[in-house]
Length: 324
Image 1 (tube, rainbow, N blue to C red):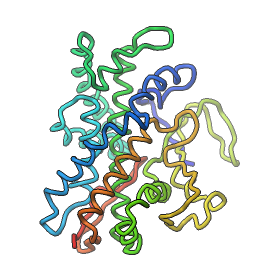
Image 2: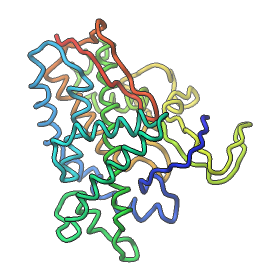
Image 3: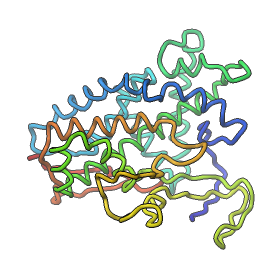
Image 4: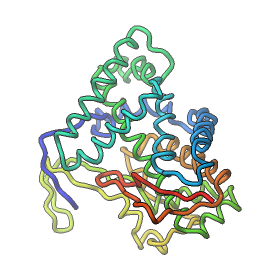
């Protein structure tokens, strides 16, 4: 376990809140992320994937991370939030500052959080009078169990969570999946021949390349496994390590794309389990289906560097691919 002291905390309910504050905002956020709600976004996701592939497929090469994986969740989440898609590059910059640079540079983290807050404050204000039908308006119109509207701070925290946690995690998972298929020819060929197996393979890729390591604040001093954890400290809970537990998964260090029993922890466990898991799964499945349909043969370009993010979210930041 890694313990870190800090006087700076990011407010992103419900993931950073405990009961009884946790449940009201979580329950409000569930309806837009049900399987039925997510299914309505699938056509948009397929269109986005094919538009991106159109841009590079004839070139014989691409950056699988920058040109494809990193753009898909940005455009889908932008539509859900009702914010301009052309702001995607700015979102990516903020996310990198918050989740990568900000791991060791608290000033960068604070700068990213302040920029995100300022951006969404502009989005929230006009929707107080005219909420609209997007996710920002949905949160503003929502009511807590006691009938009260959520404050701007609560809405802002939830929007920050949906932007930061809902984008980088998914693009990292898509990028890691493409890296695996670019470096494991047999798995790639099998999924091309058996596209109906892609949803099962996605679960295994989530297990093997879980993109998230979650941080939690110690609420009460305790001794766990001989390590004393003091109240107020931060601890990293490694979902990727849990997913490689040999006591839970046979051949835990092998990627078995047709693994049938797969109770992985890539989306977390318990009351803070990822609300957006249905959306992430859909985006991953669609991204791989459309890619393999149009680019059945590809490999890693080892003449160029593949770079990976560092911090609480792990995935390729650059992924040089040879097509054909």
